Image 1 (cartoon, rainbow, N blue to C red):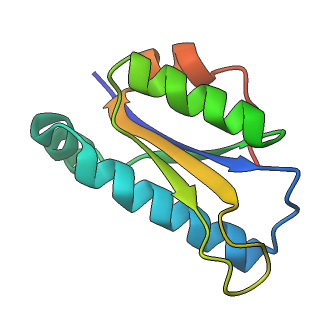
Image 2 (image 1 turned 180 degrees about the vertical axis):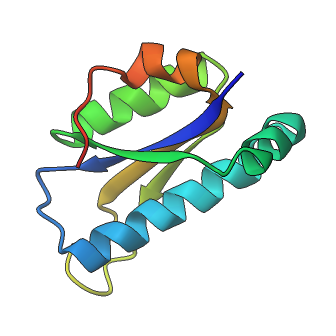
Image 3 (image 1 turned 90 degrees about the vertical axis):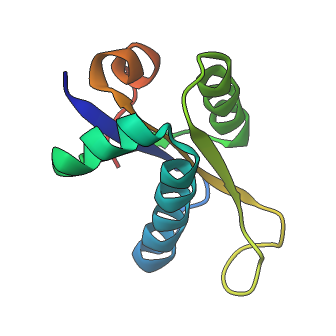
Amino acid sequence: MEYKQVILVRHDLKLPKGKMSVQCAHASVEAALKADSEKLKKWRALGQKKIVLRVDNEKELLMYFQQAKDLDFSASLITDAGKTVIAPGTKTAVAIGPDDEDMIDKLTGKLKMV
């Protein structure tokens, strides 16, 4: 079984590359900290596969976050503090997993890469 983590980032925010990278990193770490210890261990042993995908807007981001939670995936939603380029409280990214790659693909497989 392969394991991966997907990180969803809002395309409508047009974040600078550095800011987007930091938001993705925050999401990745938070979701990993929430993960089942056995899944985390296997994911780490297999190289910590991560894929960054884009969603169109906050509504879509929140929809995937809720669906991930409903499916019992570890998931994190990142809300920015607003100290640099976006307003405080802006929801920027969601990470899902690490978990079974096929199961995550059933949820996010139609999304495009950033």
